[in-house]
Length: 273
Image 1: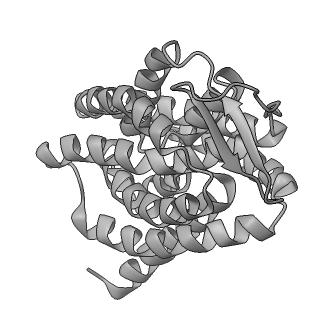
Image 2: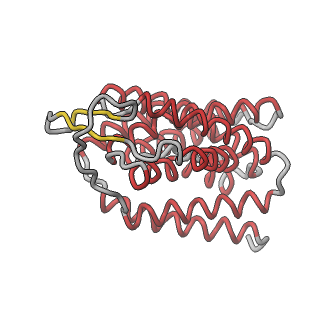
């Protein structure tokens, strides 16, 4: 492979990992458009290759997040059972779906992600007085104080997680765009815990979907290796930057950019580009 392409893939991995770490995304929201529009990969190959980068990025980010004490491992593993099932279904479907359909689905995910980031919609969770239940947890906030919270609707979240897994592996996006608001708005999980737990889950979801793609021979390993190297380093840097940066306004600008990218993807799906 041309050294320039290799350097470009590593740079893409670093940029996607950095943005993923800052905004709590898996990086696929950056990987897939660039792999489609710049490197010219078919939608299913771009999605499959993106998942490899997400796995690497999640490995770096989750190590940092778990160290912070915010990630809820027990809750993440519970939700990941359903999400992994969805990931297998989504990857299996993506191989047979028409490229135009995949592009439209991905554009819809971009619009949803952009809306969430532009509006910065999140819920402040009041501290729970419950203790000792299966879904009663605590975490240490940035001020050093231990805070308690109780997860609501754990069973009701299962079908939503299956859907999140399907969309994640079908489009090559980590699924943080769905999982974070699901945990925060519906399950009443504090936003910091939801973001950290999503970062932890993303890698497992991506791995599950990637296995299906690999079995079907869809993954481009040359491209995947380049973005994985960059994503691992970029994600750890992104988590460090996120701890020191108020990304509220940056999220709004990035959300608007996602709307623009979605429009380009739709034009490509319509054969205009």
